[in-house]
Length: 216
Image 1: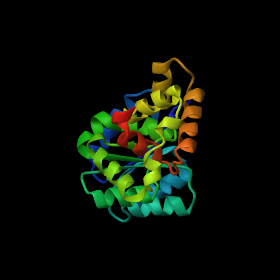
Image 2: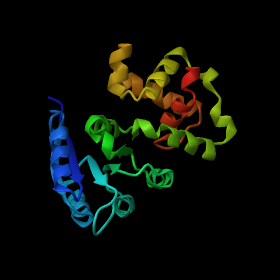
Image 3: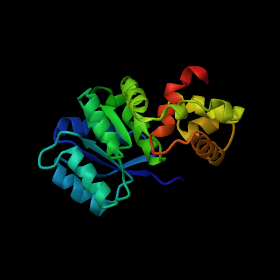
Image 4: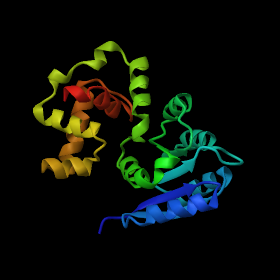
């Protein structure tokens, strides 16, 4: 049996936290190993419980999500962080990605997206709530050199199929199932695509796929 993904959740609203726990624990592949109501406790529990994924409310007492994420990075703690927020704020979104936040989910969509988000970041991928896709595209347009926005002709047909499914927010396992190949083969294709297109950073492949979705 495949090991469960260990998850920490942190939010200062007990009712929301309870609902979030119920949604996450409804999936047998996920396990809540710790729960916190403030940022200080969340950081302490991340250090002690070593979850694979930490789902953090951006706005919490004592230490907010950004402070925790910065300390996680500086301490080189091996945990993928997902931000939960009510704010559709592009400035905050970019600040989060600059801190290598792997997931960004709006609270009003958490009930339908949080499980997929946890699985994606646990597998080493990026997950961004669908309504914020434009933020990813803007981020790439503002930061990537022009030559990185081409290069699709260098991809094999198999790599283009994988990239198209990445743009549809499919996980490596979902892509493998759809294309009838192994997860290892999917991950190899992803790595080859990133090399050919000179894409660097945990978010670059998804950004590129979204921007060129119509060409795939």
